[in-house]
Amino acid sequence: MSEFRVRYSYLPQQFGNVDDLFEEIKKFIPTGDFTLGAPLTEFEGRFADLIGTRHAIGVGSGTDALKLPLKAVGVGHGDEVITTANTFIATVGAINEIGATPVFVDCDDTFCMDVSQVEAAITERTRAIMPVQFTGEITDMPKLMEIADRHNLPVVEDACQGILASIDGKRAGTWGIAGGFSLHPLKNLNVWGDGGVIVTNDDEVAAKLRLLRNHGLQNRDEIALLGYNSRLDTLQAIVGNWLIGDTHDITQKRIDNAAVYDAAFADVPQITIPPRRDNVKRVFHLYIVFAEDRDDLYEYCLEKGVEAKIHYPIPLYLQEGLAHLGYKVGDFPVTDRHAKNIITFPTDQHLNPEQLDIVIQTVRDFYAGN
Ligand SMILES: *Cc1c(COP(=O)(O)O)cnc(C)c1O
Image (cartoon, rainbow, N blue to C red):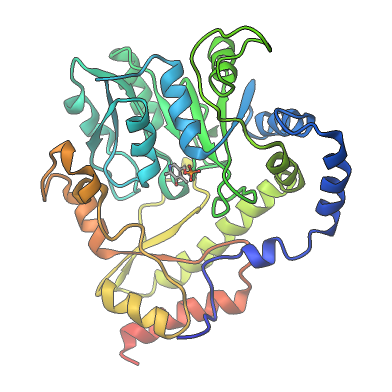
C-alpha cells in the first residue's frame, strides 16, 4: 500500500498555510525574549481561560506536566502512585522519573480507570492517584474524588488526551489538585514539537510549579528549591497562540465525526461501540471501537488505504521495560481483552465526509466478505 486514502496524521493540512504565523515569529525573533517570554505568558493566560482554572503553567512536555505536579504535592522515592494499566507509557514515565512506583488498576470499557478497583490498590505507601482521561473519555471523577478525599490522597489528572472533555459539565484537568495536558503534535491542541501545560486552582501549588519548571529559581540569584529545566518554549507558545482559538471548533469537529461513525457502526453487528454516558462530553482524541476479527480487519483497512491504528496492542504491564514491576499475564483482564479487540479510526478535524464514508464502507465490506 503506497498511498493512504484516509491518513491518520493531519499535520500537513493543519499547518499547510502558516504565512501569518511566520510573520508573528519574524516579529518576535529580534526581541530575544526566548525563555519565559511574553508570548508564553499570553498563552498561559489563554489556556487558563480555555479550561477555566486560575493558573496554567507551560512546561517542556506532557510528561513533565504530570511529573511536576506529582513532585509539587510531595511524591518521591519509594512512594506509590495509582494509575491505569492501559495508558500511554508517558504516564508511567512521569511517575518513574521522580523515583515513585506506578501501581496499576484495570480500566473499564470507557477506557478509563475502573474506579471500583482503586481502594483495593491503596497501600500505606500510596501517595497520589493519577487517573488518565484516555482517548478523550473521562474517568468517573466524582466517585474517584470521593475515594481520594476519604484516604487523603491528592489526585493529579493525566488530561493529555482530554482537552475540553468534561463530566457533569466539569472539565478534565480541574478535578484534582492539578491536571496535565500535552501539546505534542498529535494531540488535539498541538504545537511544532514537545510542550505541556499544567492547570491548577491552587495558588501555592501554582507558585511551586513555576519554581519547579525553572531550576527552582526564585529570581536571578536565589534558589528556593531543586527543580528542573522544563519551560514551555516561547516559540512553541507563539504556535499555541496561533491555534488555541480553534480548540472548541477542533473539538466539535471530532465529536461530529465520531457521531457519524457511531451511527454507521450501530448497524454493523461485529462492531461494538463503547458505552456513551450521557453526563460525559468526550473529545475523541482517539475514536476506538471493539471489533470482531480485529487483526484481519486492521490488515484489511491498511490494504484498502485506511490508516487505522491500535492503541495499544501490547499492554504496558506486559512490556519488557516494565518487567521489574512484577506483573504477570492476566493481571488486568479488561486491558488484555481491549488489546485484542480494539481498533482506532482517524477522526481528526480535517477529514471530509467522503473520507468518513471510505472508512465506514471499508469496515462494512470487510464483514460482508468482499
Ligand atoms: C501524550 C500523552 C502524555 C504526554 O506525552 P508527551 O509526549 O510527553 O507530551 C501523557 N499521557 C498520555 C495518556 C498521553 O497520551
